[in-house]
Length: 119
Image (tube, rainbow, N blue to C red; front, side, top):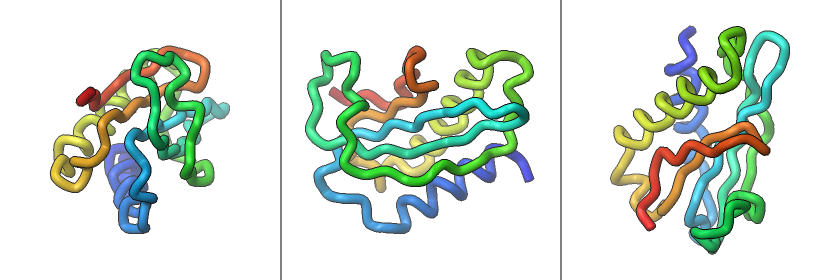
């Protein structure tokens, strides 16, 4: 199964459950494992858009999920590729994500790619 389909299904399953209404932003954290990536989903309540640690104060989260995604070409390429897939998801589900102001993807303490930033 391809990574795009797995990521789309993973996000669909999260959104099928009730995410707290207070969630204003989302952060998808990538965790490098030897042969794959683990992904975590965090829902952030009210946040300061100028605070570089905006994604730290989450009010909702999921367990790690493994996705078959190689990091053999480096973490920067993996971040670019995964954030591109999540960006596609955001575009395809735009109406159901209208209350979410910001969506970021990153490797914890690395740069964050904003796939949605309506602030």
